[in-house]
Length: 288
Image (cartoon, rainbow, N blue to C red; front, side, top):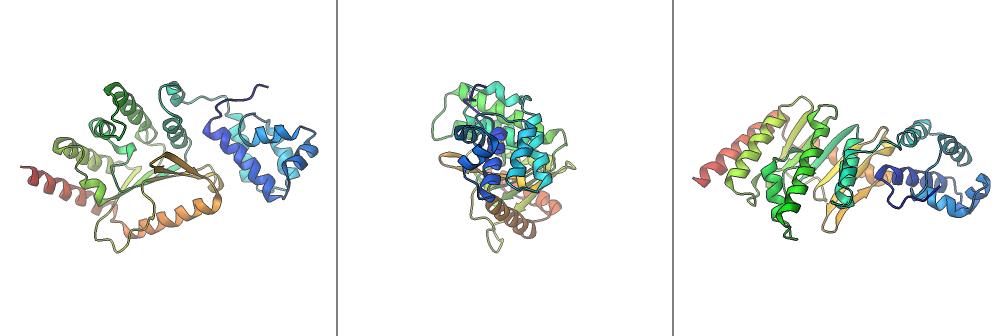
């Protein structure tokens, strides 16, 4: 079987979980290879997502590693059986970077999504003009066709919550509501759209105003994607060098604590809606 040159996010996650399973059992790669009757290099390839495995081999590995977490094993088996399913984001391979495609893949397979944003309105709730303004003002000074491509991709990502199948909670800091980069008309349109989206039954918009006693997150913008089981949840954070994907259980658990703190500190959904209306009117009055 030819090695994959570009394994998908889920293929890499499957490999990472196999490695975690092996390491928790205290087995080296060579030891596992000997038990399986394969070359040690094959173990490395499986754990990097560069080669696939069957469900039967998954269960053999789990048995050899003394893994009794049946929900995890079953969830990994589902990843294997879905491996032929290509996502719409693959259409953009060769035109957009892997970071863009990975975010779309992460969102599309999530059971629920929670985001935190301090710099701008979350991408899943952005209008076309607002998203375009963000890309137009990026440090790379993108040409217009690149701005249009990235904007179209961002809007297509929104289907994951527009169809109502994925519950979505957006924690938005007041600073993001007041950012000036998009201009008065675009900003006003975006805040109106945010109010409208917040009324959808599966969408919860929660504002963290400036007067909150403490900022519950030491991080900037991030997305928490709930997996089919808690063990397969992932956090994606924005950095100056691109996306960072976090799947180590202890680190992911830390973000669950942060989200719980935000839930306790943020305005309620109804209060947030009124707060956004107030900010919108205040900024529109100042622009007159």
